[in-house]
Image 1 (cartoon, one colour):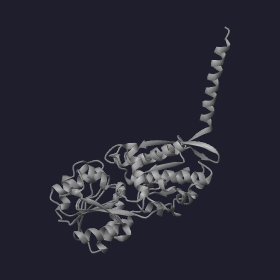
Image 2: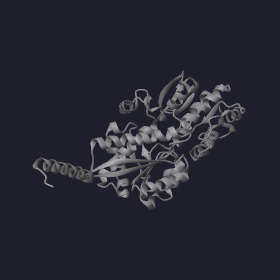
Image 3: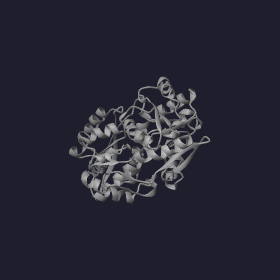
Image 4: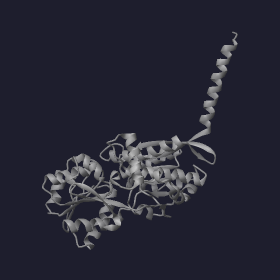
Length: 388
């Protein structure tokens, strides 16, 4: 069979295009960012928010083009559902590291973080820890980055604000997972030191239940002035709704996992949250860098969609890790990457840093100025934590 010049030319062009495509694919290697978190169950929204921030950062890095040492790389997120179970998080992390060669695994719950800290140094991957439990960085794990500020910084200011406004009698009606237990362990002695009293204590399974009538009724029998509550935003909002329907007129201290803006969407506004104190909704933050980030997020997800701090802090964490890879000159040597994390934080562009992370401590904790929010007259008011 003979081939004419025109047919041969077409074949040659096709081969050239295929070879060029193959060369481009070979030139651009893939770096996997692992994620294990709740993508189903009562905490699914919380887990999906964290993942959304990671994916947003990865999309930006890939659009800009990412190079380390003159070599081009593309990031890819591999996300696995652990249903908020520490044992599942550990299984997922091993899969992410062994099968996908992920140098970084992001985890948004303390139980999973503690499970991974048992082997992440040995298996050589950086643990992106999205939880505010202070013992995460007290364990001396050299490959852990703790993304949000420790919750212990909120406790005394929250107590001062709520007890001054409503009274000293507090009931505990928070979630029953490891993170909530750690909050409660630190909260109770701080309240008692401030002259407050625990009049009822009834943690509930926020992630498995949607009916909190009996649990809330039990703590309201103690006639509290304030309820200390918190877990994922949606079930926390249902606890607030149940308390108001049962006649509770006092205030709420919200653990930092619960986000006021997400709760307000469940509750139809902020009226039922009157007298609450908690972390500041990202969309209510007046800082210029934060406002710009919110606008970019809305363009991607819709004008009525606001990012939570799970979104924004995980977003910044991925940009920080990518910057650390550049400074370290490697995408695989996790010890060198971790060593450059503080310099990377200081080198972050403002538009990549809506919370103004200004450093990473030797123990892996991110440093930033913290703002909180209170609800007065049905509106969110921003307050710097140091002013409380």
